[in-house]
Length: 159
Ligand SMILES: [Cu+2]
Image 1 (cartoon, protein in one colour):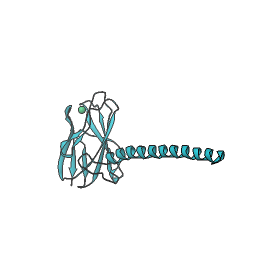
Image 2 (cartoon, helix red, strand yellow; image 1 turned 90 degrees about the vertical axis):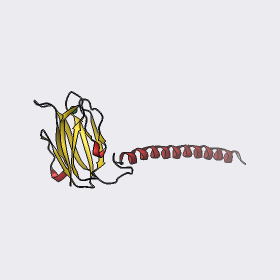
Image 3 (spheres, rainbow, N blue to C red; image 1 turned 120 degrees about the horizontal axis):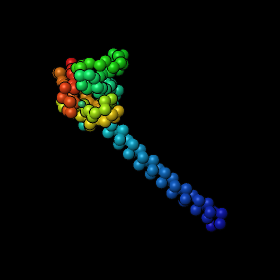
Image 4 (cartoon, protein in one colour; image 1 turned 30 degrees about the horizontal axis):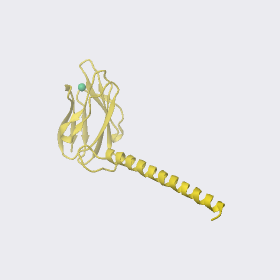
């Protein structure tokens, strides 16, 4: 084997090792990334991922003269403005994929819960937000509320 060939062979081996390392790195990154993406697509009241765009509801907790309330906005039906109301009402169809995006705009902590659909945010601090996706898998009238302020509530209707 000539010196030239030896150098060439050594060079190829080195390249090969780097290529393997790069591929391993990409595979690991994709697996970890994929795991989180697929995991984030599992509704909180389901066990397998759901592909599709959810109906988005934006919930703000805001202070009022009469205490904190939930204010609601949705992308459903082209509406997209917050309507302050003591008791907001959300109406959806059975089987719909729903995302609640909650942001706390009050300087005390608030959360949002709806036990029937396993919807529970953590206690959110000032301007902290959390999104929860679930399937409206049963019909009826349900209440979502803040456990820290039982008077803070809204109605969730599934038809
Ligand atoms: Cu609250």
